[in-house]
Length: 250
Image (cartoon, rainbow, N blue to C red):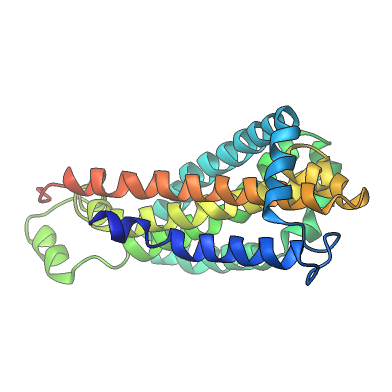
């Protein structure tokens, strides 16, 4: 990819930033509704220590929730994929669990876990675990039938078939679930922080009450940046794993 192609995604960002700056400074958009990008940047600089503390709190909570969703979601996917009977029994509940809005159960998390980091981590986990389960099950149950037949002919045990054929073939889809979960974990953490009053979510809620729209935009910008960092970190893992994939052997 040449330098021009690498910089192409920055063109819309620069364009929107310039339009927002012009619209705000010219009075087309009132600053109490849409602050200028320069004022948001100024707020980030002036309150750098506050945002730094909130950002790392959100990183810790979202990262812990993401790690739990990857570990437990993959484990659940392996269990569900191992047996069609278990999958028929429990997979609908996983779908139901995902359809419950996190904002509706966040107050319950506070009642059960109290204010603070455990509630935020649980919120991040709940939001992000289902894509890992769904992608893992999809990948593990979509193995090439010819390869499966070959393993049966070679009298491979179910464990050998799972870990030497199904799992390696499912890695791209599993990693796809991880990438989706990366962005959702930040969303879940922010929602949890709305209730617990910590991190970037707590700053958004406090700034809203203070009518500090510039601080709200600054917090949202950092949250979006965190989601992007998580997503691209996992995107970098994919080619490394794919490069080390080997032809499955019994």
